[in-house]
Length: 253
Image (cartoon, rainbow, N blue to C red; front, top):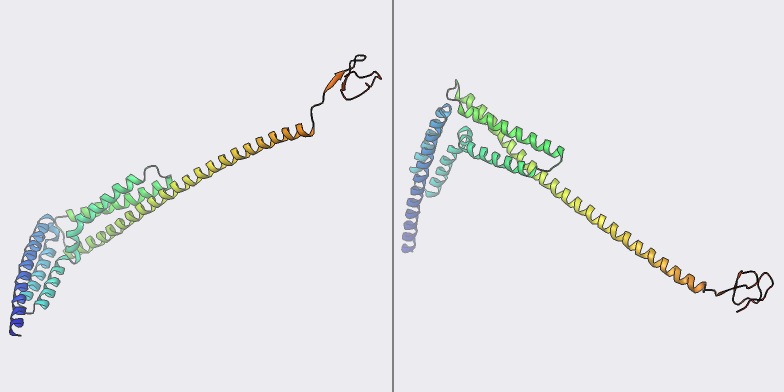
């Protein structure tokens, strides 16, 4: 029993040490990235520093906890503080812009050869997405602001619009792919119907030819060939089986 308790204690210590090491690495990485972000976007510097301070406070509180499970939960909360709100969206801004640009390329590639209506639809969706990117990049490029709170609110509003535009692009890609697939399937059905019609016409022609040939044969059977002989007196042709010509002369066989 004592050995089991000792073993559990050792495992807990090792797990705690491992978690502390990983958490320390995460903390360093998060803080470094946020400081880089503050230099790149100076109009968000105060908000970023506030977020770092919140994180540091939660992190320090976690370090003073002896319960490893509670400590882990507190560290998870601290990490979440770095990715929430305006600062979290700022960290993800380049990623969403890249996603939108990738989807624009995809939409342009699949819209080639589509109908005018589909092309207009794709053009509108792409234009709206490009305008949203321009608005976000514009607000991110501002170096001085009177109120960072107002700046963050406006940034989050534009970011939300960007998320909508990304969804619009994905939906447009799906719709155009579905339309293209439907058009191809419809074309194949028309082609098959045309081929079937041609075959039916050929069958009908063959059937008619057979009927005509059968008719000729039947006619020959019904109307056997009649041998004729010419009257020596008046020159009229008579059935060889007739005895007299209409002129009264005898028919010679």
